Length: 101
Image 1 (cartoon, helix red, strand yellow):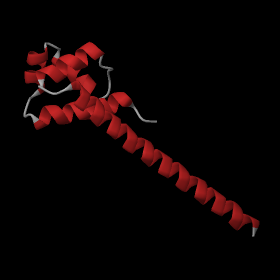
Image 2 (cartoon, rainbow, N blue to C red):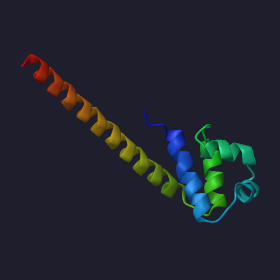
Image 3 (cartoon, rainbow, N blue to C red):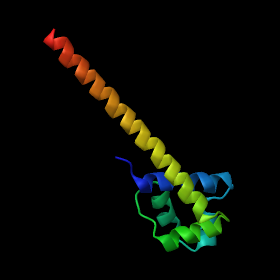
């Protein structure tokens, strides 16, 4: 199962690090507790739209870019899950054919 909050956290952490910002700097700029941002980045907490907007503004990053990056990450994970499911189905079908022979 794809966890949106985990992928969102990965994207936010990547954006923060790409900008050379520490959690402490982002926390001060966005006026959000450092611990809460850390939990969001680790995919442990959901970010409200207001909080997400504040984090994006503090990093001078369009919210649409973050959402697009998360959507791309979700699509990649979905494709990987689908491919894995298809491989498993093919293997099972092969096992059925082999046991019937």
